[in-house]
Image 1: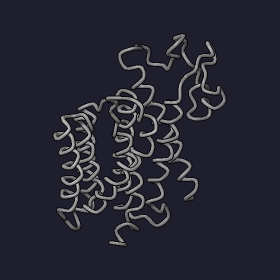
Image 2: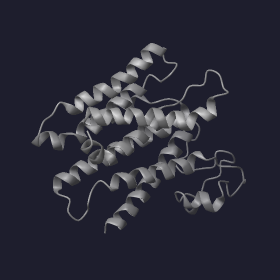
Image 3: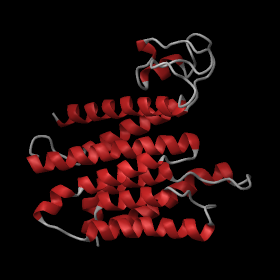
Length: 250
């Protein structure tokens, strides 16, 4: 049962990843509600819209004009699928209580909002204000079930720590090192993680992964800003899944 549940979580994540990438890609460009090729403008058939599978079958090219689709789609689909699969490992479907399920559903919805922001930031270099506001609201909602039984200021300290550090970096660098929305995104992630130590771990993961992945790509380019949104989201997924282990060693 647990394995089937995890497979379902991956499928749901991949579907949303495809949807997010499609919406960001065609914003302001395409009025059609159906997915179309950005090159030849031909509407895509349903079998060319299957997340991950269609991209692999077509080898990343349009069936009609044979031009490259790009890697953003497959990366978004795989990343979103793996992210939700990872979140799925935090609950045991056979023993979970109603409270466990409520928390899990809220965290899953919050994670999906983060994945949208990561896709948007990765493709455009921007974080939409409405998306950031929604992520904060969902982060607060995700800590309500635990707060009902045992209210704690830890989530708010965690959010203030994570968001405050990025706000400080933004102000000191005058927006050269991080974007103006990164501190809000970091704050919402800190809230959802619920503990200052977890926020500290997330801070390390986000910056380490950004340097590890992006530095080789930008080291010879001047005035190139790293988009931190995807790395902040990556840090949330990793730290949230590993939270019980990380808290046990402090």
